[in-house]
Amino acid sequence: MGAGVAGLATALAAAPRPVLLVGGSPPGSGGCTALAQGGIAAAMAFDDSAAAHARDTMTAGANHNDYEAVQYLVGNAGLAVRWLQAQGIDFDRDADGLQLGREGGHGCPRIVHAGGDASGHALLTALAQAAQQARHITWRAPAWLDAIQLRDGRISGVALADTATRMPQELACAELVLATGGCGALFAATTNPATADGNGLALALACGARLRDSEFVQFHPTALDVEQDGALPLITEALRGAGARLVDDEGRAVMDTLHPMGDLAPRDHVARRVWEYRQAGGRVWLDATSLRGDWEQRFPTVVALCGQHGIDPRQQRIPVTPAAHFHMGGIAVDLDGYTSVPGLYAVGEVACNGVHGANRLASNSLLEGVVFGRRLGHRLADIRLHAPSSGQHHWVDRGRTADAQALGILQQLAWSTLGPVRHGSRMIEAERYLATDDRLHETWQGKLIARFLLAALQRQKSLGAHFRADDWK
Ligand code: SIN
Image (cartoon, rainbow, N blue to C red):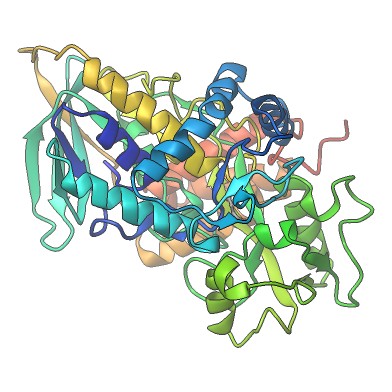
């Protein structure tokens, strides 16, 4: 379930095992992968190494990372790039070979892009095409996973609904992979599309799957600060890697005194800085006007997104705001993608194998989708088929869905209490408020936010992206 980078990599690697690939939108479109502007982090330069990539990943993750998962990720990054090239992805080049960009938290340039800041779109198009040509894969899209059937505690079926008809159809299935993406859309300010609302997480939770690290949500420091419903346009960190600076209303650099890496500090530091300026009534701007070179080739998405709001980033500073961007937590899985429910697997942003720790390093997420998706796919190709049991079955669904008004309240609540800066007392108040309003806490979105609040309250010390203003050290 899910046809972004992680779902596609899993499905392709599962050959020759037959796969029904269910996507929420037509093949090659929609979801977070399509919007991703960052590329793939891989130590490809002669003076770089997997060890240095691992170090940066662990530092960004506040050393909360699973060490083995990090080693596997960085150790397979070069292979992932070559595999993607074999799928037809044409990574950007310069005179020295693959062009390597730099983003926050990386000690050196190590990000490969395809089509500049349209990398996610390029990946999705090529992988979706490969999956459409693969004989072991049958597509079903756009469709939605309504419910899961369990028999003797293991997965035995799914109820799918085509998005257009909403008519559910029951299918037997021995192995179900959730690759449904993140939950940024549960927050009032987000870079994620509305479909990244934690729906996979909610279903796994209803099945009794264990979650892990739910409190760790990453806020991207530079979403475009404009009034608009839904996802805020992302202004890629690669601009800062190329020399753009974050400045205040008076044009003074805001990161210089805060972190030795300045504008390229790990994302959590930068997001909090921007948040604090805005809480104090100021604004923060990304000044990219000194950048020279080919904007149209390297940053076509940023030029187009800013243009839609009357901003020319080559001539004008870009107003920015933090926004929920990536969930480091998720369904607890091992490195093979096994959850605590037999027959249920998870991969990509919906899953948590600990690779990102408390804060993901830039451009490690498409990489995670490819590396761990392929690992899970290979595993599924080899797995011994489970003989169906004759026990009683039962169906599990998410429960009630919030209507538009309740969802708006929940999103504001999540943003104000679980945003870049958290306060224990405000989170307790939010918990109480949720518990007293049936319209909110009986919905699956309300239940997820209650889970996040609980996890954030239980972690009393700041760590990575989970920053508690009431942690007096
Ligand atoms: C960005 O391009 O700034 C986002 C990349 C990422 O989330 O890794």
